[in-house]
Image 1 (cartoon, helix red, strand yellow):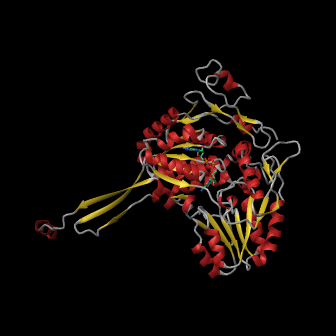
Image 2 (cartoon, rainbow, N blue to C red):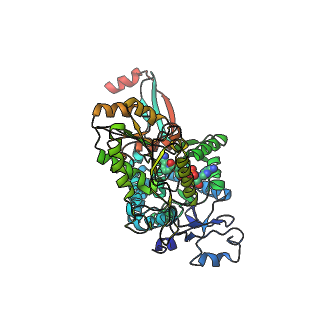
Image 3 (cartoon, helix red, strand yellow):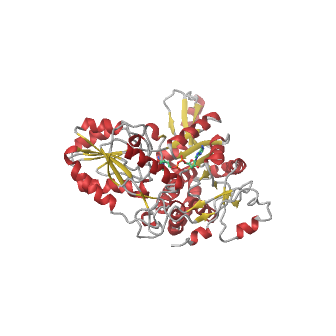
Length: 526
Ligand code: NAD
């Protein structure tokens, strides 16, 4: 459908201290469409794209040469310094004054549905047909515009002779590192609560999907935020991400991404200044289908969970356990819905399934398909890449394996593609044990009409969120979100939890004299 206007109009430089600036060494990186491999943004390396190069203005002005800046350690230092300088004034504002900025931004994001959807479709293949990310991000900003007031401590008179106050204060500069699969949603989940708490932010987007975050930076400028309050940099994990994770002036790192990178970010935080680290990581989420469940509904919903963004969702129910008595019926309904997908250009509003995000993701899923086919499970359908007519996009067939041994690699590791394992169980206990036999614990679901069983199973499942007669992406916006075990630490999502990530706690003890002076009493009685 051609390169959308938003790509041509989008800023490609870092947003630091209220201005768009190139990288300190002029470095840039390339972004290609995973649908047709067209260049969305060109990458040119030093010295050709250096600001000091005589070629630089010409390159930047060239309509086809769209250069996304790659953050250096110097850029990270500059961005953190800007956030640190902006912190005293921003944290001193009332929640209402900060909220006014957040509200304005929410309105601008809501109105930017089209460009944001086009940018994510172009960079990482997210189909525009199911794009709810701008609405979700806008709703984070409008929610937290009102919730800064909730950053409150407590008081007590329980210690004789003392008035005790517990104060909540913004922690300082917050760094956010986010993945590519939902860049606009992630931006809202990190930045909105941090700003509402009174913190200033440096966010590094993913190298696979930098443009929608840069569009959000354009909206931040338009909304009139003071310089330095929000800084948005683009680039890879090295050097930019690591420089941020190691920075001595960053007091809280909120990270969403893979478990392996989360571990590294935690390590860098510990080695530098022991900054607080919040981790939202990977998943291998189970869905349990009991014989009394509404099987048709369960099949449609569990396949949708695996189809959304071509299976590239942290909470996708990639392991399904169905009672053996209804397995055949469930699998038939699942297969029908899972295979009925229109593959194509993610910019086309009639497309259901887009490509995997890039060649790295595509090759990774291909490797898992080979491992699955070589293993002891049965390939029911799929298992191949898709050759599109007239195109060379990174498409993978929706794939189902059944009866795979629980210890198989593909049962244990996150595939991040439209690949699902369906296994059977005989008893409730067996289903729970299999569901919990994983190092992940992000989301789990249970389908049954028996309320007692639903509650027993929900209690036994080791996951941060449980869907009963619903599955991911279903979530409650007034509930915390996060993972057990290797799926993370800390919670996001609801004011009481998200705000807490960005607050320090201080105890103030005030000694109060309990003695009532007789002179004062006498004076009062006269
Ligand atoms: P990733 O871990 O490869 O990258 C995530 C971010 O970390 C990117 O911005 C990347 O540039 C940066 N990064 C990479 N190496 C780094 C390093 N050494 N130091 C600092 N930063 C570094 O993950 P991804 O491929 O972008 O995203 C997919 C993963 O994210 C999946 O595992 C998925 O389950 C997870 N995810 C989790 C949630 C959640 O809420 N739990 C939501 C979305 C995605």
